[in-house]
Length: 293
Ligand SMILES: [Zn+2]
Image 1 (tube, helix red, strand yellow):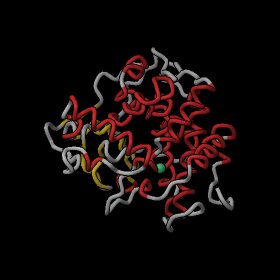
Image 2 (cartoon, helix red, strand yellow):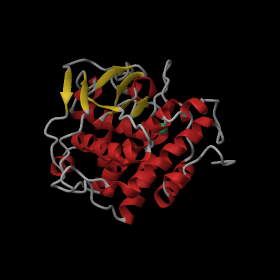
Image 3 (cartoon, rainbow, N blue to C red):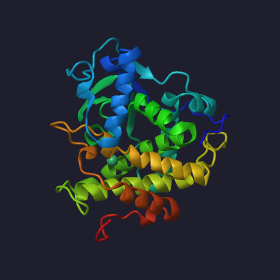
Image 4 (spheres, helix red, strand yellow):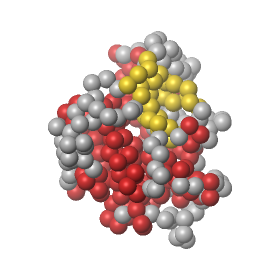
């Protein structure tokens, strides 16, 4: 999965925000490598082991520097292909184009690429938490460090599309927020037929529908933003995304109000609903009216 090198992605409004690398990542060398391993174990088991980093004191964010501004050097498809930071920023353009065609009165969410860690109305965003959507400020928070791990673990091809999938899933929650779905189906506990699981599976279905038609979205000059992924890439990305879906990486913390803290569906359910969106489109993404999604 790649962007067309000539595509113009300079219009993205994605902000970078944060207080620099976390202590664990900034350690570099042995400590840095250990942190990566722990993060990956956490990602696959769903168990937050990051407290093991740094002698049990936890990977508390340490503000070594603060940064705020737009994503650097993010003007073309080539930039997006070369940088995770730019790629997830560029995907926002494609997502906003897509959703503005499908939702009347569509309002773009904010998107913040987190540099280290930053506070949000839904709690602290960092690579310990993973990507999430915060309904109260209608903003998608993405930590490119996490996406780099995805890339390293699953290889460039699958990793790229898995990144798109995760960002598209978070935009799915924004759609649920602005269309009233979240309000209509509030969190009512856990289990395979709970509203929380249905909400997550619908976001997966929306991501599948988006990926199926993302190549139709074009820049100002009519250049398609993205090249068509192969079936093999789709399949690999699905495996990757299911393995490190946000259900596996969410660090539960008191006061969280974002949907990622709700129980997600199984990997099989997630794959099934992604495939439903991918093959049949948005119209088939009603996860709330079926008995067991
Ligand atoms: Zn989610």
